[in-house]
Every structure is written in structure tokens, then in C-alpha cells.
Image (cartoon, rainbow, N blue to C red; front, side):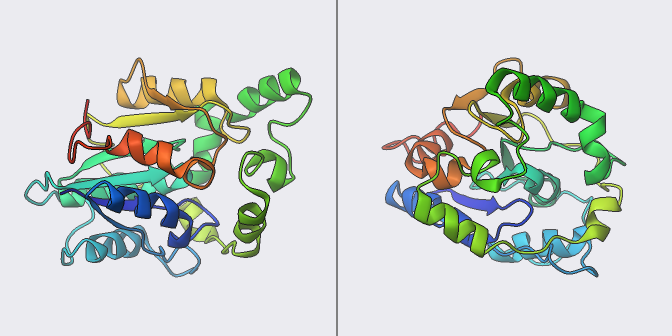
Amino acid sequence: MTTFALVHGSGDGGWAWDHVARALRRRGHEAVAPDLPTDREDATWADCVDVVAQAVGVGDGPVGGRTEGNEDVVVVGHSSGAFVASLAATRLGAAQVFVAAMVPRPGESAQEWFDAVGWGAAVAAGAHEDGGRTGSTDPMVAYFHDVAPGLAREAVARERPTSDVLGEVPWPGPGPAVPARYVVTTLDRFLPPALQREVARTRLGIEEPETIGTGHCAHLSRPDELADLLAPSGAPGAGLLR
């Protein structure tokens, strides 16, 4: 049995992983999806990592320090949750999977990430191709276009504020541990697929990332398919790093 620590992105809460968590449990695994304190202006990266570590039953420890390896723990980070997921994976000595993720570099803030990877140009190119859907300011168009309408409305209603401070503080990690996995969401209108592939290549050394045919919120639109990618059905623990 593997324990998956599912780390949400900006605006989300742990609830958004509920469908994936249930799918993983049906496959014989355990899953935890804590609410990160990213809605608090006084929250630190260490606070966020502590929440993930405590959710999988590990006590406090330094953000940058690696504990004894936990082969039975996999940390999954979605979108900006990659900033916390990578720190947590380092802390836990665990495997890590990035899903439509903003993989950070040492000393880079979340706000700086967008310019650093060329997000503006990538969004402009996507918008040119799809008539402005990519980069739309309407969350139903940019994020939830392939999510069931009722669930999409719930996601909007349950949106949590995100700390401005965490967006400005340089990321304190040593860099994402490799090997890692990256799942590209091929219908994404927030992080264009071509940009995700470039991030996977330049920041993780992954030339051929895995893919899922969804928009940005694969955990809401195709939870069973995402669970199959994370832990293939009928093969507990298989495919975690490949």
C-alpha cells in the first residue's frame, strides 16, 4: 500500500482531491489531502510542509532537510501546489509527481515563476489558436471548461484566498528531487500544454512526460483516469516512478 499526499494549488482546498482520493483507495492505497495554510498571510513554506508531513504521520523537521526515505509515500502537487509538494517530498524522502504543475527553482518566488518560464507568451500563442479561451479571465473557461457544471460551481464557491506573502517569498528548496514524474494536461487553458512540456524538460529533465486529456483541473474532471496514472489499477505501488 502506498500513501499519496495530494497537495492542492492556489484557491483550492484538500476537498478538491476527494474524488481522486476515493479512486486511489479503491485501488488499495491510502490518500491524504490536507488544507494548506496558504490562505493565511502569516503562513510560511515551513508551515505548509508541516501540514503535509503531519497528514502522513511524520513529525516536524527542517524544510530543507531530507529524512530517511519513505518509499511508501508519494507526494503529488497540482499547479502552484508544486512549490509545497517539492519541499514536502524532500522533507519526507518521498517520490513526487507533478500534475499541470509550476515546478520551482531555488530562490524563485511564485510570482517570478510566470515570467521565468515565458507564461505570457505561451498563453498569447494559445489564445491565438483557440480564439481567446486560453488565458480567459472567466474561471469557467480557463479552469473548469471540462468539469461537470455542478462541481465547477462548487469549486468557484469554495475558492480560498491565497497569501500574497507566499507569492513573494523566494522558494527555499534545493530544487526538486529527481527522478520525478510530470503529467501534462493536454487541454489546459491556464498552463498551456507546450509550456508544461518545456517546464518538465528544463526543470526535471523529463523529455516525454505523461499526459491526460483534460483541462487544468484533472483531479475534478477525470479523477479515475488520474488515479490510474498515479497508481495503475490492480498493481498497488506500481508505476510510481517510471
